[in-house]
Length: 294
Ligand code: HEM
Ligand code: HEM
Image 1: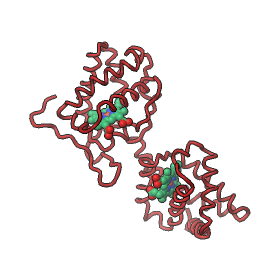
Image 2: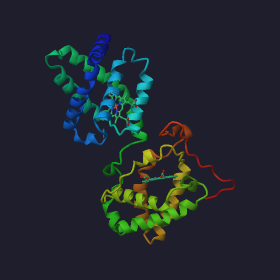
Image 3: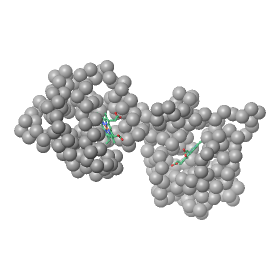
Image 4: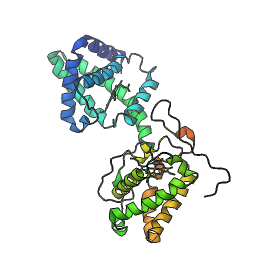
């Protein structure tokens, strides 16, 4: 991206003045036309939308020294994926909507040169954000893509459907909540709510109806320092709950295979791998009690 492109975009934004709100309205009309699902990413009334649009444009206005502010643009990318629900694929829709809005707003004055400048500036900023988002995407917010996971539809039948999954989870959480080490993570949590959520989650993971509306396990656990040893302990408790519910060893194996497919996005080698959801939050660390044996 040349300095000339940066300068052109900056001047173009400055010229907008109060008209920025008019451009914002065309932009969101175009954006929702391209991808109606983005309405859930951008809820709220016109005033909110205008503020968000103006935030975005102010980034593009300040790219004169983009190299110097790249660390803060990376952080902004992280916020976008962790807090705002943005995904990599959204950048394309956004860029298209922005160019269409600018063309509509400027009419004949929107020269080829100006269009090239906007595209270059958008891409350069989006690339920095996307790279930071991609790093997080893999470890922390990999979408719950059930099809790519253990997917074992027969398993749901073999465990007597949703009720069977629920019963296993009831046994499982009864033990986990009382467990002196891993149980520490659950202080103050509602056991009933967790049993229900975990049941919906696993039913979907087994290929049944997807009624789970919570966050991905990766996101849910990103501030918890969960080690390999804890994972193995949790799996032993889960296996026992499945067996105690009267299911066979082979059913337990198949269940744990699906369960284990989520381990990679949860387990951490050190507390520095914990990602905090907001400023001031601390990683959740469970200390092994003295003389502990599981
Ligand atoms: C190069 C492209 C983009 C730039 C420069 C940009 C810039 C910004 C800035 C500066 C903010 C203010 C809050 C903050 O600094 O964290 C913001 C908020 C926001 N952005 Fe972006 N953004 C871009 C792309 C996207 C995409 C692709 C999406 C998703 C479709 C998105 C969704 C949002 C939402 C929902 C907010 C509001 C967050 C809130 O206030 O609750 N942005 N954006
Ligand atoms: C030792 C390992 C684990 C520990 C210590 C742990 C701990 C927790 C805790 C404390 C919560 C409650 C969070 C809250 O309400 O703020 C939770 C929620 C949850 N966990 Fe885990 N977890 C572990 C492994 C797993 C695994 C492997 C899976 C997936 C198979 C999983 C799936 C879930 C789900 C679906 C929720 C509910 C999320 C929601 O509220 O929507 N967890 N976990």
